[in-house]
Image 1 (tube, rainbow, N blue to C red):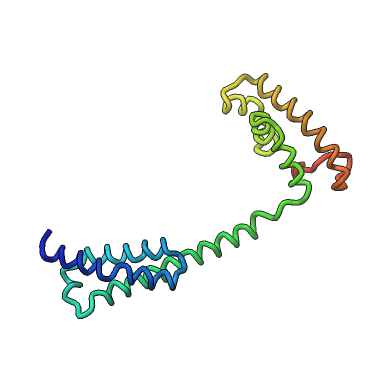
Image 2: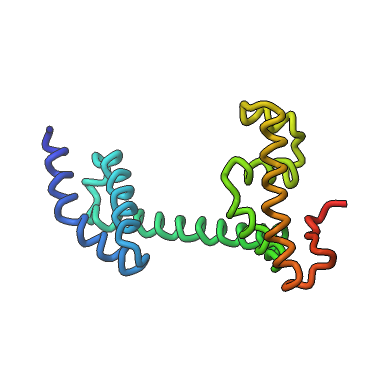
Length: 174
């Protein structure tokens, strides 16, 4: 390692911990502060021949780290805003009948539950499910029959509690 490499190593050792503390105080997440400081020092290393001649190379690294922190914060804020808009536009909160249906589905064995969801919610045919699951069509029909029987018992008991007419749940399809 040349003199420049030793100089950078000393510079890094002298300033990394302090920069992490500053960024942690600003950001509130120590791991994120370490990542930001590491990225700033990596950028400094790539330009060390020029930066080492600055009056205060630590100021350059600190400025880069702060700009990275602000940039990450802005990206996170933008992403959160996007997610909130998507949730508001496309995913209304589940109604009580949906919660009851999900709980009832959770009681089914995994293969029966998957068959019901794929057939009734994803609109796959019995043949498509059989192909996807690598089983015979009759096996899928058996899973669906058993699942419907189990669900009918559970949902009939709970439908009166929710005021669903005729003990049936509307899945939103005509």
